[in-house]
Image 1: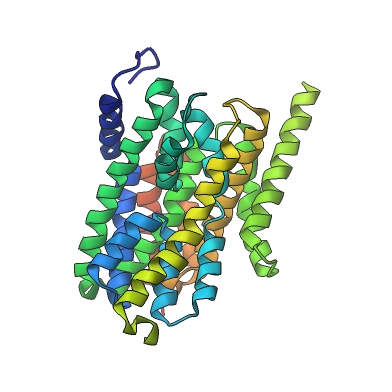
Image 2: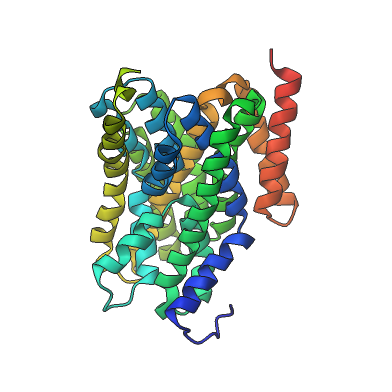
Length: 242
Length: 115
């Protein structure tokens, strides 16, 4: 698609999003990551159906790893809910940043629930990169197509991992778990073209583990707010000086 | 695994302590995004916070690694991320190159330095 493309039908836009899945590096990263998650579900004694539905309903890697391992280990429901909820705070600013790019002034809120559900690092990063080339009328359908494509990939991988579980050597499982931080970092770097985003990334890399080390409650949220706000203030000062 | 004793309990847990505490942030995002237009100044700040939280997730997954990844020594994990970053910068800012080289560095490092 080029920026000159006129709006197309909703179905054509959905299909364009679905097709964009296969040229996205995230399709392969998701496949590897969800092989690991499928194997984890098997190892903790969940059924295949449960593990697959978990992928489709939760749709966030870190939250699924926490849910499966904590539930399998017999942690209390309250404990698990808090841990899952904390791991998912990042989804809030992602949805808030993405929805204004895809909605039209007359858009009903319910039409945004599905794109919001598909929002995870994979969709967020690729949507930020691809959406500017998609006509505004088609962006909701495009996001739904992309999210559906990723879901197909993740579901296939969850099933594959579930059956492979016993055969995976430990180093292979470790390498699969390592895909998440690597892919998150590279794709965020690629998308960070403005100084404010690069600063936020650099400061977040430093403050995140520091806040965790200092055992600040809700460490990810506060380190994100602190690093993001500091980066934004530098951006404002720089703009005022120009 | 007493929690898993009942099939119904696991399905209930999936919705109550897996789906809901995760999905509520997305629903809140839909609410907060109402009335915000693309290009609004505050979105620059929101994106910076989202990026910084993501950076925190990346750093924490690398330093306080989950599961079997913890069996790979931390210096190897940190070095692998940095080697992946270098590959990304040197090879036309390619995400795929960064990921593949970083993975290779992790596996090689683990084979050489693991006890």
